Length: 334
Image (tube, rainbow, N blue to C red; front, top):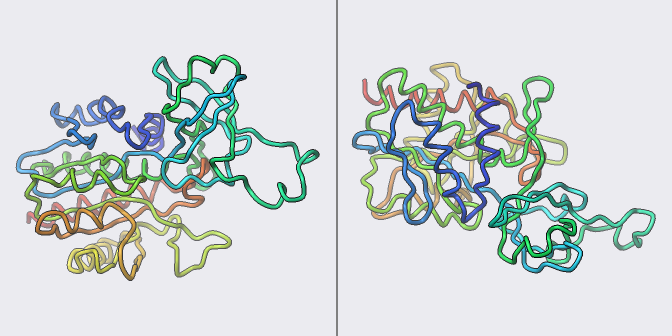
């Protein structure tokens, strides 16, 4: 399975934040060649432990989205945000509503520009003012509390780019699967724990439960970060195709960060450094201070249009991150 096909599977799995157990069968299938012991902890974090499992590889698997707060006659839905949803992209966007009896389509309500007021044309509606149209069939089928996800397709673009919703953080989960494949090929999976964490998008709530009870020598967190694009400052971004963004932060272990940088230089693997003056805004923050502390590194895949249905990344950046992690683990055992 190539990287694009793997991403399609992970993106298609409806792991809305707080409903990550929906991914259990997906990850069991993806990891079946290496283990039949893939499980969800009580919080919803999905794990696979190989041997002693003292090296934690973690990426969150939850997806931002919406939650239905009210259902109106005619199938119109009032919603609230689950995670950092960008209100500007909701009008006319396609969605899928996850009901108890299956998924049904919906679309963001959009006032035609011919009828919009000057004020309406200047700014986006707040999310709690937006409506979704699920059609007449939604009455009696959709209930308050049902989750809503983007329904945009995964598309291959020119020059190796991939456009899709939920690259944050399906790209990170993809890195973990590819790293497991590389390590298995070198008989080096023993001692690794893979964790596909819950509820990062709603406050990194799954990270501490994921670490609780474990004795980890180190943790490597994989997420996404900002790729250079018009309107984004160069010093605040990485480059698509420029490889892994290696995190440097007071919340991260300096020796691990420097070690990844030196290894990337030695191997000729493209990378950039992402420097943060405090917290990283990822699960690495919680993992690094769990219990008595876990030495933690953060590797990020650069993406554009974060938290929209049209995020963009490059497959080679995902593959390079996985190769760098595998090389780090193998080197540590030589």
